[in-house]
Image (cartoon, rainbow, N blue to C red):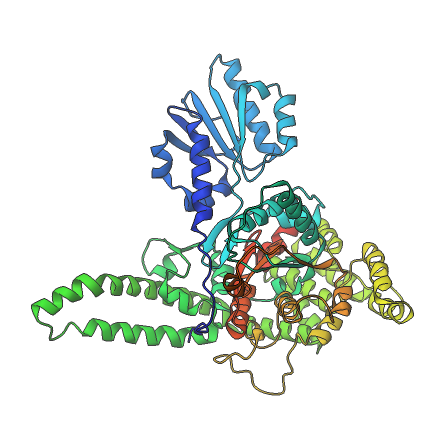
Length: 616
């Protein structure tokens, strides 16, 4: 069931050091405010903080009461207030209001602001404008990276996508550069750095600056190669419905910071249960990367094996029973509890995802990816909109149609847009503007499409010049070249023969054999070729910004050979669990181990929600 790793697979580095460093720095900042204090924590920092320093750790360092930042008058009576916050103007203004209200009431308190992961000048400027800069102390908690599992590290910055790709705000580039610098200083030096995308290039440059400024320590490398990739290089993958188990759990229950809350429908009781989803969960570890169609078979076999293990008790003497209770029973009970939860979760997924509607949805998606029966696909999307099945799902399908067809015909665009606004409200006009800006939902211009223009330009001038012209074109109208990329990279496998999902033959299994994720295919091709040589046409279709740089050595040859097969992939703008499953599959096939670093875990719903007008 779960595919075993190759015997020659290298060992992954131990990332627990990242947690220890973050915890020690936070404790140091808390101790700078001696005595009892109340701690105010921004809502989206609560889950990451819990993975680093739980309540008892905070209490040990004189934190009296914990409050969630709620932008309203506070109830705390403590003389010392500590605020653990993101660098957001709104939150800083609220803290200024708290301090000014205390001053007006004649109450003297000490205030400490701990910004994470960075302290921005704009926040300090607000403190100065509001006249309380001298009344507070500020610090920067460099909590860049949170290990979610042995091979997944998150920056927990979901706003990165919207800020960078939609608003054009590059303030987080320094953060991603610093995160890479931290990994390099602990687990490097890196031998090669590959990348594609504008933000990837800026992150690389930010990291290089920090390497040149810092002191150089030679030690054995644990990570050999790095691949940086922007989310806007591949929008198709996160727009597709996930069908691997971990992806489906995220879609339906929302995995937050590596933890999921299963409700009463899963637990078969009146209580909800929070479960950590990582490789420590033996049941989950075996099914997380599996296509959902294989999961029930595995779980039923696991239940039979568990029953057999329990049945061993029969006929045991006292000594054997004592050994069984002390050594095996606790593990069996834990496995039984987890198995029950995953069976409950699978049943819940089945109810939602194996209905006729979902099968029709997958069929439509596969047709769009293959470029077949487009009129039927448009009819399905129209019906989806008019039945008001789901605002987010309808928008996702519109985007998938547009991006795979290189834009919509003007009459289709106008008709579908009008139907969407009639169904879900004219307040979504701004959503269409956001999607157009990112090239996710666009109207084909009359006359020649961009792809045709580019191919003619490519025949007239050399590739390098064509790349520069492509940049100029893309600034006028961001277009997808999905069809051309699909042909070049064979992203849509030929459907002549049956695809056996129990024995996957390539990364396409994560989408039922219909599509190999573009992001993962690029990583595979670049690693195979040791650079972008032979992929010039592909990088031109992706609007360039590709690079491959050889780093400094510093590791001994034995360590270097092992580290060369450890690849760190950094997704800038989010990454899906389906992509992580695909990279794990690729690693098993090629003898690599992939470490995924992402600004946040994403999926189609989160992507669409970030672009809806009510977020701006």
